[in-house]
Image (tube, rainbow, N blue to C red; front, top):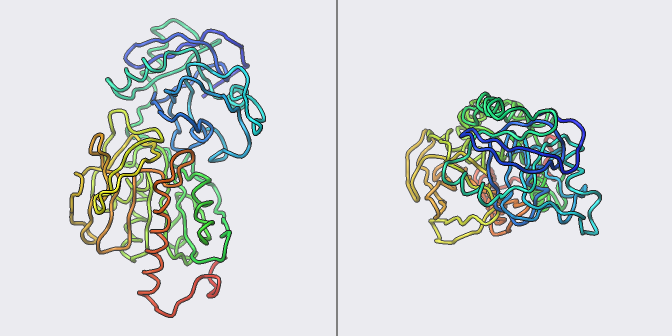
Length: 395
């Protein structure tokens, strides 16, 4: 991504790989950016969306017509920076209105070099992406504006999301620890494939000490932490490129270490169990996606952000190298696999975000389920074993 100075209300163009060109006005930084155009349907939580590492190399189209109303604060970030490749909105707020706001959204986009475009009919654009699928795109303004054929050529020369290996671009470079906020009960290793801040926060509230390790962590580095369980985080890119994470997951499954994966982590567990993954037509990105849990019939409204999915049918049972597993959850909108549960190994995953920042809290109980899985596994190993606070180990 390249950017220059902000030029208020200048001409900006959004160019899709099918040759569609949409005129608008500059928003944020000015220059050129390339990525995959996707739409997000959330009516709130734009700051969390922008700072979600799962949006790496994606140009996000906000379907909600008014964006920036509450400005930008320093508390709602979900990672260390904005990750979106570009930002498309209809009506940016003229003046933010929130006691928590420290600066306008446009100012933050400019400061972080995020090229955006406003005054766009985002509903028409969303319909096009739904009908034709997510596609490569570019936003151009300022000195980057040249004739349309050259702009389309730049877009067509940009890489596809299929085959994109992006985890290494978003993962932490150094391990770190998030301490439990209450009496420690468990120690968990979180493999950072693009983790959001709210995940270890929610684990901490349950008495879990979280050791966040880079995506390159080895089995030895994981086991050195003496974890009660391992968490596979969300993240960007094509899961077919995540060979290391899949291999590590298989090693952990073989050792019966309790596993819980979300979003990209669901795809990693699926591939570790021998399932395939595929690129969806336009994916699920929003905070109102229904999911059915087949064992109970319960429907949860969930927060999601994914453009790839695991192959399978709702409720399907299948064999793996680690015993029988089941497609435990699915989306009633399109029958997409939304969760996998191993029946003979302590592991499960969901395609959505139970930490839901922003979003509904219907799925927060899954963190309790992870605790139950770790507790049962600990008891089956040694009925007299105690929580980490009483038995030492890595700190």
